Image 1 (cartoon, rainbow over the protein chains, first blue to last red):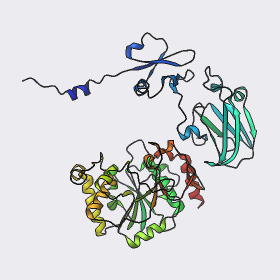
Image 2 (image 1 turned 90 degrees about the vertical axis):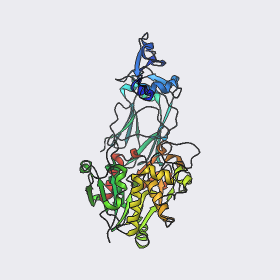
Image 3 (image 1 turned 60 degrees about the vertical axis):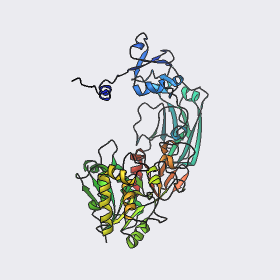
Image 4 (image 1 turned 180 degrees about the vertical axis):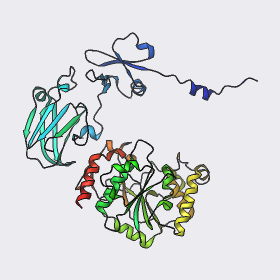
Length: 195
Length: 275
């Protein structure tokens, strides 16, 4: 007697794995297209991306125009430029090195005695491609510890100024404080050298 | 009379529930008055409790390998070492002394399950986004995250026996009692509410305890919110807790497990050490 195939079982066993490739411009890092499997063979500059990201870009959930390849990172990745939607993007608390190990922060703030020193990391300075205009203003809100509702000081810096040199401010601050900012870079770090 | 808070954890997934329980126990020690600050942890993983700097915040730690996951919570009446117990979800924080609630329950109730949930802006939650089963089937709107009971009272034994039957036979009970809207998963809240309805418990209508319930879709925001932490900040320091710019005074059920960082733990520990 002929055995009737269970289609649901068959489709489960024959799952087609799609490998997605992001094809990019090596000068700017801009992603030009997402290609599945062998269709990317003809391109020289490409990286493999996970299927979730590939499908999200394909479905238009992530705009292709917002996608770049981070050429400076050890492992190539898609750097999506997000719109400011989350509270952590608008009011990002700069993590303290005591509690969080942030790898490769772009902007480091060192606190020593009453001095706050803002500096861009060598990696951030040496970027071939900066997504932010040099006259972009960065506001740093120095607040009571873990409470942005209580402002103590405000520091404003242009990115251009930081690219040239570190900026140092002498301020009278409480023993414990936090620093909040609009998130422009991916990673920030506060190092309290008084601890 | 021996009263205490019972915290039950199951540490199978990525989340360290013992760490959340530790934060809650610290907050209990920091805020509740003597005699109302006993804490017992029931856990299936004793190892992670050995790293705590102040394990003394748990007056008892009991290993439980018999009941796993949510199932353990349905046995809270059998697992508790206390005469009078409040069993809490571990993703909660006390910010003020709530001992007077317990004093009231000990005098007046054998069993009490919270039914007042509020937003972080102190508004009563009327949205049923997560509770369609309750609305459609006329279940009492109970939250098992705060459950008071007197051990071995007849009312409590009857309630928990029925609740365990519901929990063990979710399809049968759903088909019989929840026909207007069957839950995808029959959880502790549904089981408690259904047991309460079947047994005719209707004495849960008090104005307290008021619990800030931080699920994204019930914050009365005019936009959808999967994660509340994407929309407002969680600002905890020794002066207390602000969510956004609202000072919190009630018991907070924060739901998002990632907000209990090592830094939050250290703030709670420092307060406990200086008390």
